[in-house]
Length: 172
Image (cartoon, rainbow, N blue to C red):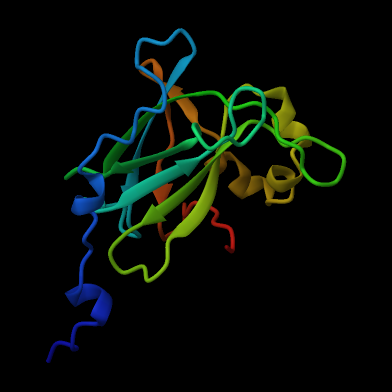
């Protein structure tokens, strides 16, 4: 006998109405400083999550959070793929007199999640990663899961929601 479905299995997700406008291009794709970020949302069995919504929040290139730049939203397709066109953010003060390494704050909304999960995407080959207080507080074995990888002219950042290679998530 099958268990009764939970509310999160019977209600939603209803992300498609939030994705009617293109919100994944924070800068034009042909901008000289454009950075393409592509990834997949994967479940605990390493299967794609086709109905997820990914949000990014970031500072501008000067390390400032602005009202007119820094937020984007992308849905995932049938293979769990999402993408953004943005620019690399500047370093933001960490509240303790230092600076954070350039990063994107990433929120994932998906079926079975009553609240979004939050993580960060750091940029590869960034010297500042070695001094970032958040990144260095994460165990070494998990740290590389937060650093994007160059792939096919873009940065690849997959988010695994569960399993042995689960992406480290932060409490919001």
